[in-house]
Figure 1 (cartoon, rainbow, N blue to C red):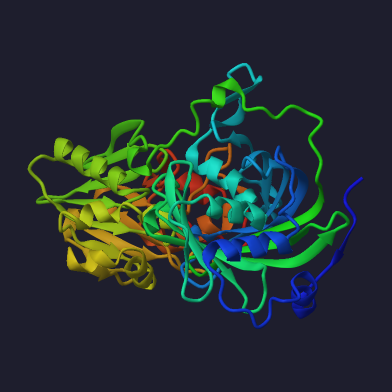
Figure 2: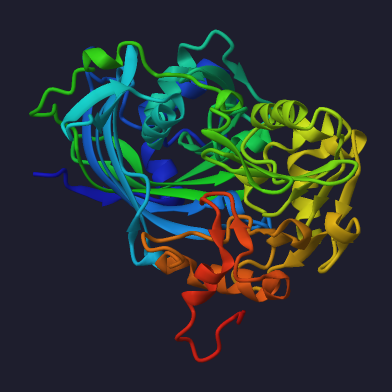
Length: 498
């Protein structure tokens, strides 16, 4: 049976839980923690494990394409089954996500087990068998974030921190290590209440693909929907987290019980060496390096990059993922084109991972060219770039170079890709589709969610295409334009006719 509970909210909760809270002088940091633990009913917990099993629901936002800087891009439904030992900060977390707007396409399912001695992730071997292996540090931290839903975990963590301090506003600060990354944590209180209102975490997540580009990150969490159990424990049933001021994740505690699990969740031996900390700077650069058309090199990997050779220089198309990735691209360019400078790098999307390598080019003074609506985003993510190189806002149809060397900026017409641009190089017989072209199994057929993306790409670049123009993009192998156009042959008004 799950625990029965009743809601306790507002000022009534403050007076009921701690009648002397109002009008007290400011406590020191440890007194603040002790009062909060008492209000939570967590002071007299047993010396051993404190097990909690729960079902979590909620939502998250794929923020990496939030060009407005004010909100999410695509919403995810997320749910989790968690088993936590709040005393030792250990746990077993199974999380699932799907994208409702993409016909509930699954996105990011995982099973992680963690504890003081390591972290393991469940996967499958080549035979399809379920096996455990060391977890990645970023995924382990995602699992550990469920601990932050329970304030007593943070409070006890703070009490043990050597740098615990009281803030001028009555909050507390301390530093913790989470999966190889140092986090500065601040807990805040509403005046007159013994209960923590929320927290702020500042850190650089250099191992996280989607957070790397910002370097300094701020996660702010707010607790809500407080409930008291029959045993006298108080806990929030909702946690809202913002990333750099933008709504990011919501956790809702749907069912829970304070009971030891029936199954063994001991850390598998394979997890004793986890979590594995790997900087995004060290992400493998390219699986293949090939000349796909005269004067066009494609560096194919998890994120493709194209290089256009011209008479006196080269142009780079996109700077994804990290500074280290960008440095690897530039090193390869020096090998492939030893006598030609890089005239510029064109960044084509407002997705954070797609522009996270720009610092590598700025460090060398290489000009950066971007969609005008993305200049503000680059300035906010990488303010230092303005002191190192030029940041040029392209215009739709702008031509860089002349004759066979010309490359042309083509803006997506929207509404789906209104901050994306494409690059045509007619003299080389190629066009760069940024991240717009996302193929299904059949040649030329777009994934269901990407049909509008393909249509906008074809509409923007149709004047530059011939049937054999090679379409290059960030996540596909080269494909002739006629295959993409053919996918719309039965449309009443196809976006492009060749």
